[in-house]
Image 1 (cartoon, helix red, strand yellow):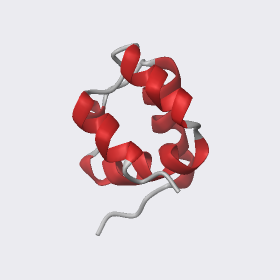
Image 2 (cartoon, rainbow, N blue to C red):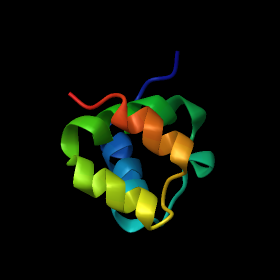
Image 3 (cartoon, rainbow, N blue to C red):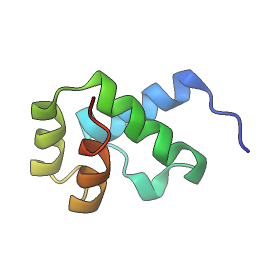
Image 4 (tube, helix red, strand yellow):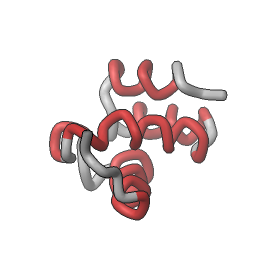
Length: 70
């Protein structure tokens, strides 16, 4: 199991969900689920919706992230 570096997880999440400068296929596979988990507890549903509307995440990535909302 890969070690997840918290600062990298946060940076990936910000780049994907807020700025759209990265996409999930571009990040290390070990970070995909932790980034979605982080986004689900850090961002509002409206922010996640906006990432989908802006084309930053796919419908599948959106569904997987929203499913994790607390």
